[in-house]
Length: 195
Image 1 (tube, rainbow, N blue to C red):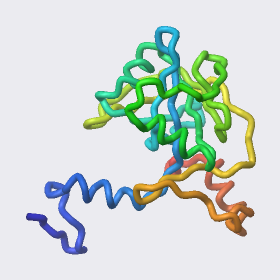
Image 2 (cartoon, rainbow, N blue to C red):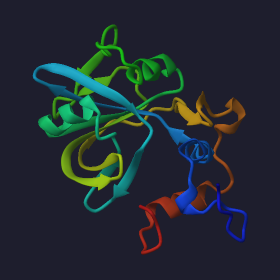
Image 3 (cartoon, rainbow, N blue to C red):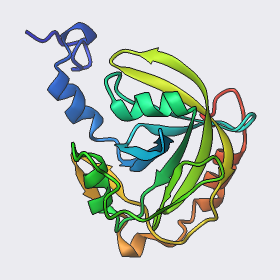
Image 4 (cartoon, helix red, strand yellow):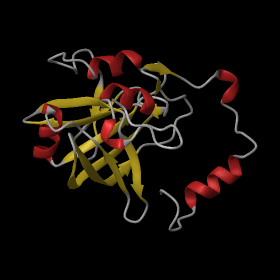
């Protein structure tokens, strides 16, 4: 039985995993493929739980499940590359999110400066070395120190929202009037900002 708080929210001790996933599905995320090379073989997995963490030093984070074989390979190698997917890479995302044994079959890639796969056609890539790992329930919270970054491309990102792929509407790709405010928010560090 769910306990309701005064504002109609469900109390924390009664959180149903399905409802948790549905509510968090209201948050639109980008989609990445996290890659490495382990014992000479390319390894990777689809990951939505990726974020910028720090400007000084340059750090990012992602959250693999504790049972992930791809994460185990990344931990062994000590390096990884975050491939930010472009809108037309839905099939690539589906492949890396599947249980397909050879996720790199038919996928073109080149090695990053640290040796991890950069997927051809990715919107951006961030090459990292493993900085630290923290407990996060049934996931790990992995911090990576950024070693190098890709050039900026003009294509649109692949997004995930309410359990399905989505994208930016074609008429929504021009800068919004609040663009300068957003740029100031993203580049100004204070005790209250996330980056």
